[in-house]
Length: 308
Ligand code: NAP
View 1 (cartoon, rainbow, N blue to C red):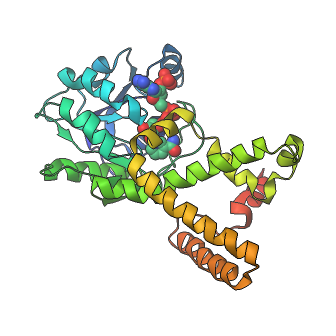
View 2: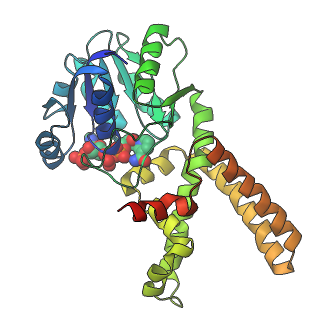
């Protein structure tokens, strides 16, 4: 894949931005990279590891001359960033973001941007529980999906170029309406995270099981919840504050299902439980067949340990 942009500017230099920077270099998608972060410490780290060609003190400086600007801050910080960069954007530039919620970002960012730029919201469905400029790696987006939620009237050329860009980063690209994106993600990501947070909170509260037992026997299932529940608190707070309606809808359905299973357990309804678990197993099989996870036992952990 050849160069698609001259200069890409990152606002926020965490997991997603740093992974994008590595993947851009891997594929030679841009001539130069600039970036900024809120704290001097993050900017110094980015500088030290050579994450981008130029680390700037302000977002306004970082976007100067950039033909692609990627907003990589928590969803709740998008509006302030949009306000700050708006007067400094180069005419014809594309502004995109990687926020986990799309309607709220569109409402927060859209009104501040000048008509001379193309605003194409996006969300790569890839991540880890780690944060910061050192946590990124070039393979993060390989064979993962990136959803773009272009607004009505988005310019075809700009959209095509951004699509090619994400493909160059290794991702598959889908276009979606922002409201639908938020509902889909409430099912596949946001509610599962809330459930993981809850389960880990329950274990923490339950005084009949000691902390050391929880940790010692965590491989029985709890461990996988803890990985999700270790995700960045700021990012996830903002997700639930901004994708409120869809998350509440899915949570409502979740609690109904939970009561169905609770009743089946109380009544000893083994058939219901067996049918239910057979259906969920088929969903897991579908995810593996779609190449979105490994079929290796224990999510491939045993293999990783053996290789070390
Ligand atoms: P991260 O590693 O925590 O990095 C966040 C970056 O944003 C940091 O550079 C931080 O600067 C900066 N920042 C935080 N608050 C800010 C503020 N109020 N004003 C300006 N800059 C601020 O986060 P990330 O995982 O890359 O997530 C970034 C975005 O990607 C979020 O919108 C998230 O929803 C989305 N996303 C995340 C994942 C995931 O799994 N992590 C997946 C897909 C999409 P400092 O370091 O100086 O604080």
